[in-house]
Image (cartoon, rainbow, N blue to C red; front, side, top):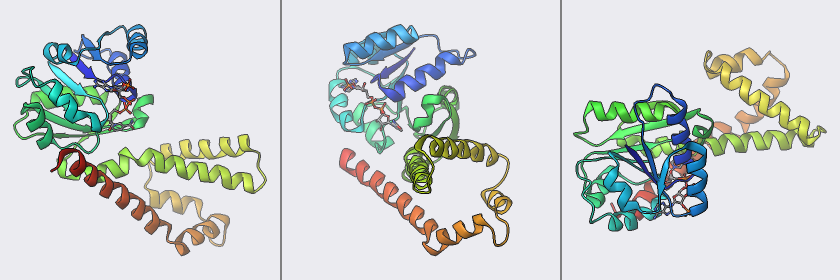
Length: 267
Ligand SMILES: NC(=O)c1ccc[n+]([C@@H]2O[C@H](COP(=O)([O-])OP(=O)(O)OC[C@H]3O[C@@H](n4cnc5c(N)ncnc54)[C@H](OP(=O)(O)O)[C@@H]3O)[C@@H](O)[C@H]2O)c1
C-alpha cells in the first residue's frame, strides 16, 4: 500500500497518475489529510481511502509519501515518533528537506527524495529522484515508476537538488512569467488580450514540441533571417544580457533552496 501524508495539489497529481496508469502494480492508495472537505473530494474523485490520522497511515502503508509543506515536517516527525517506520520506504517531495534530516528525524534509512514540478498536474511533470545510500534498486524502481506516471523522471545525486529546484521546480513560474510578459507586450503593440494570449500560448506549446526534436540553437537559427525581425528582437536580448538575467534568476532560486534546507533542518 502507498500512503500519502498530505492530500494537496502534488499528492493529487501523483494519485491521478497512478490511477491513470493501468499497468501499475499499486492497488491500494491511502491518504491522510486534515481537511474533511478535501478528504471527501479525494475519496470521491479517485476512489481511495482517506484518514485524518497520520499515525494510522504510517502504520499501514509500505511506501509513505510525505506531501506536506516543508515547514510541517519537524512537527510530523514528532507526531510519528511512536510509530515504527524503520522497515518502510519513505518518499519525500518536500522542497529543501535533505535525506540526512529525513533519515534522522523519521528514523528510517530507506529514504528517497523527489523534486516533482507543477506540470505533473497535467501529467507532464519533471521529477528528479535522489535515493539515500543503501536503498535497493528494486525500491528505487518502484518509486521511479510511480513518478513516471506523472511525466519524466531522472535519477541524480542529492547534491544537485538545489540546481534542480531552480530549473525544473521553480521553472514553470519563470516560463509563465515570460509568457505573461509576451502577452503584455502583445497588448502594448495593439492586440486585444485574448488574441495576445492565444498567440503567446500556442507559440509556447509549438516551440516546446519543436525543442524536443531540435536544439535551442537550431530553433533560433531557423527563425532568424539576416536583417529580419527576429534578429532585431534578439539584439535587444543580447544587449540587455537577458541570458545573464536568467542565470541570476536561477542562481537566486538555487541559493534560496539551500537556505531553506538549513532553516528547516538546521543542517
Ligand atoms: N506544488 C509544486 O509545484 C511542488 C513542486 C515540488 C515539490 N512540492 C512539494 O510538495 C509538497 C506539497 O506541496 P503542494 O503544492 O501539494 O501543497 P498543498 O497543496 O498545500 O498540500 C499540502 C497538504 O497537506 C495538508 N496538511 C497540512 N498539515 C498536515 C498534516 N499535519 N498532516 C497531513 N496533512 C497535512 C494540507 O492540508 P490543509 O490545506 O488543510 O492545511 C494540504 O492539503 C511541499 O512540500 C512542496 O515543497 C511542490
